Image (tube, rainbow, N blue to C red; front, side, top):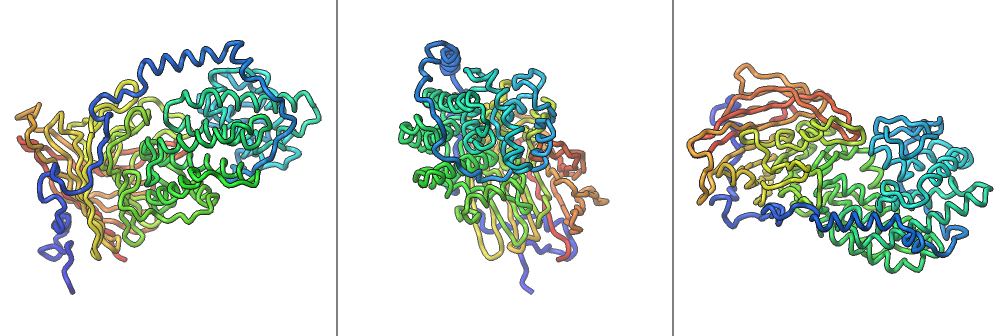
Length: 601
């Protein structure tokens, strides 16, 4: 039998199997060499990326004040539509359980179970509930739970309630992205909100639709590049397709949408904030745009079609074995939501053929999947809640998540301390030096200095996939780089890793002479039971499926500690984590090797 790179020098010696294979070495020279792909963060790493400037914030505030004036109300006047030009079909399914609760007289969301007669501006309601209620996305849930006739009886009084308080500009209810979503859902579920015999009510709804579209037309170009601008342009496009009097703006709306998409969607389908949850939201939004075109017997623009073609394989590339996506720079994505979006797209959800998609590296061996965050975090202008988890990975075996990140706030609200903690390096399955984030999280929540560059090397052979990854997040403060080498065997039964801290040539250590402690953390998926080995160098992991993985580590003792996993809905679930702790040498150098090996077949 031919020896493999994982065979121990002495049979039965598991520790030797911790060593990752040494061939091929993609970084024979120090990480600053020319091998591999260099991914740079750009301005955000130099400290000049401070998010929106003071001038931009002041300008946005002045615009909001102008929207309250009589002059702006006059600008919103125009043709009174008598009916819609078409009613599109909703491409996505609703939640029948939520719809049933709405039919019973409640509006439940984000842990807040409000009566349907409640005013939308209730100060006791969480912000997530108010946004959800103002968007009228809940019409989708109501429609799947009850028929059109009963649904109209329930929905129309709620719409009338909203019109009584928010028919004129309101900073919260008239946020551009909320207007866009309201336009989408009011037109999609027009039979539920426009079947009233009350002509005054019907006229008010149609006129409000037109006025909201005219408002979007005036504000969309004042918005910074990002999802809010894309959403506003998408809403304006839907309005121009479906509302008489707004249809003259269709060419402009489509051009605005194409430009907004080009500003945040890369050629590989990645988005500016690097959050797969944003990619899914964008996919769902564009499916509504495509549905509005179809309702008018048209095809969506080439720009929209091209982005849809890129988003699906990009998302498939970061999906784990259970069909969901981990919490990368935002909340995770539930398997059912992702599957529904893929089905509605009509596209084949195959992982991208590109080695890295959106800054994530994917390795597959049989039923084992590995996803690694292999790029710098996004710039502050692109994301306000990004994570400091560079080089972290998630691992699934079959449909079970074995190693995860700790998650991110979802639908349900979380304590502020926990929400912030989920963004730290310690909440990710990677190395953390001196209990310091690899990229600083500023007091305002945006990411500051830290990882400026990630160097990525990848090699594939019949034996498996090698990844050689380096980030410089600790170079300024500690004079070292974090280098992570990973190998996943072709049969998926062996994952080997090595985490090194390597001195950066030409830098001056700020803490010279002081040894720094560091940890390599592996947060375990929900339902994974961990049992330590007697020698303190390993653990046995038992999955809910019954399969067992053996973990071994060298370079420091391995401990089992408490952890938490926050799923897409925001519910914290107690879990465990494996922690390998060690201390650097006086030069800052250190090395820890580890392995995950599936036992049996």
